[in-house]
Length: 153
Image (tube, rainbow, N blue to C red):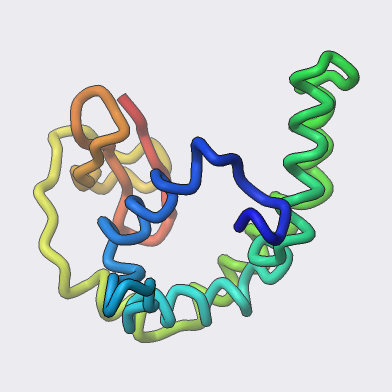
C-alpha cells in the first residue's frame, strides 16, 4: 500500500486485520495470500466497481481528503460531488450485476435470518436482523425481499 501511495502507517495494520477477520486473506509462510472468498470478492469488484480497486483512484481520493483536512476544500462539496459523479452511477452498475447473479440470490434464500417485529416501509415484509459490530445495538435491520431497504440503529 505504501509503495502505491495509499493508506497511512496507522491504517496498514487495521486494514490487514480486517481482511483477515473477514476471511479475505490468510497468512501463509510469512506472506499474505488471498483466500477463495477474497478472490471471489475481488473478481466481483473488478466487474462492479473497477475504479475503486485502482491504487490511483484511492491515492487521488486521499489527496482530496488531505486538502479537506488542511482547510483548502469543503468536505460537504467534495462528498456531494463524489456521491453524484462517482458513487451513485457506480452503485447502480454494481446493482445490475448483483441482480443478474443467480448464485447471489440463491445464497440469500438459503440463509436463515432472525426477523424483527419491524416491517419494511417499502414492501411491508418483516426486516431481518443483520449482525454487525459497527452499530450500537450490534445489528441493523435489512429487507431481504429484494427492495434492499436498510434501517440503522
